[in-house]
Length: 116
Length: 113
Image (cartoon, rainbow over all chains, first blue to last red; front, side, top):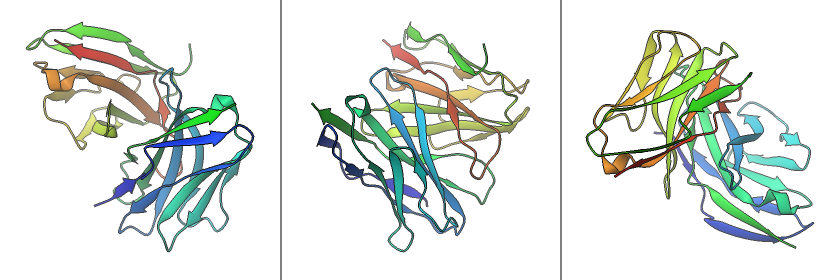
């Protein structure tokens, strides 16, 4: 069964520094997608970045990049130059392409606090 | 307004009552989803729908009922609310599977007393 694991319940980072949020996954499918979402204290879910299992290059979106290591089944989110507004909960999620359901499986989340 | 909306945003109900959470999207997305968010569990899928009149169970469907008579609406009904259903409920939609992003509604905070 597919599973997402985020082992860091909480993280601290100094403003302007980079931070890595860990995510490992388990799936028997060859074709899948990995997503990261941000949930600020206001509660909404904000899509950050996507990585397909067949993508050869790591995905990047502005200050966000996804460190995709397929053999290790890890999909860590890297936030460069942290800002106070990055303080939030971050969720890693996976979608298996087989079954064609579109559903996401989420990890438990990591709370990031950016210190001034 | 364009997007995905949920109503009500906050709801307090009593054990045993029926309550319906509404979800409406304006993109004509085929896929719609209901998740619940609880501390320590992240988001868990309750039900999903691939198209109008096509629904299927997710990870935690017990005690919930869904329908999808129109593409844009996907209501979630708690037939007889229990305290364990106190949670934040998110509706989401997506244009397809694969690399399509899921867009989330603002959430409904439900308290069952």
